[in-house]
Length: 302
Image 1 (cartoon, one colour):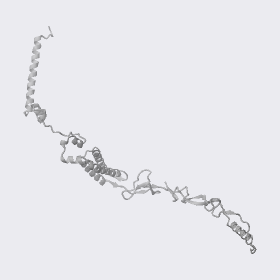
Image 2: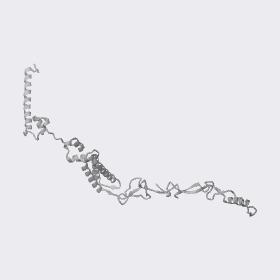
Image 3: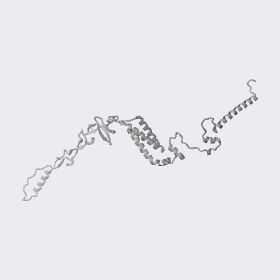
Image 4: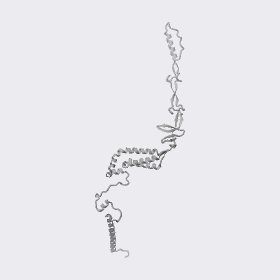
């Protein structure tokens, strides 16, 4: 019947496939053996560990050297996890790290402060050197904060070199405004600031700032105020005892007790017992008091 496969034909097809497969396997295996034994079938060679394993050597007998991964971010931490890879110098650096770490922190902060100081107005600097210094600071900061003590010394030296190159490109510019609202501009020497026209430099909280001078409205520029206080002479009463009234009383007493031989003493006209206080006006006096708004200067800064 057309299209029908007889059992004998099936057997022949299976035998043919097996024969072809055996031939291919035999050819491929001979090439692999030649490659392992050093035959020039291909380029390169098989690593010792792999060759030993294929040749029948046990895996425990193969020495596999520990190597650091190429993308290791913290070299020091990896070394500490694999102490057999550390040299004597590296071990000494690990032991002294906690002692020298504060010093590197101090140097890092100094470099940051100088960089921040000279990247603001009115300094002019080389942008390329500034970017290199910024990158060096980031590298050093990461190494110190993550205790990568093996790379810290080199990164600290790199940051210092980058700082020297950056500072050599910095230039202090004269006459540049410090910023909106400051009313100051850069002076003739580095770090100096001068007030704009119509302003003066004043000390506020230990910092020199520019301010305008105006007359104190509280004291009208006098530096003091007139204040009414109680009179100390009359205790604010406005009247004091009359001394003439006291003299008249004494005369009357002498005349009354003079006896037969008393002389005629003219009588004193009667005087009031109290008179107005001559030191004040109705118990109040005017006193100058320093103006608290301007501290007696008569002018204010705004």
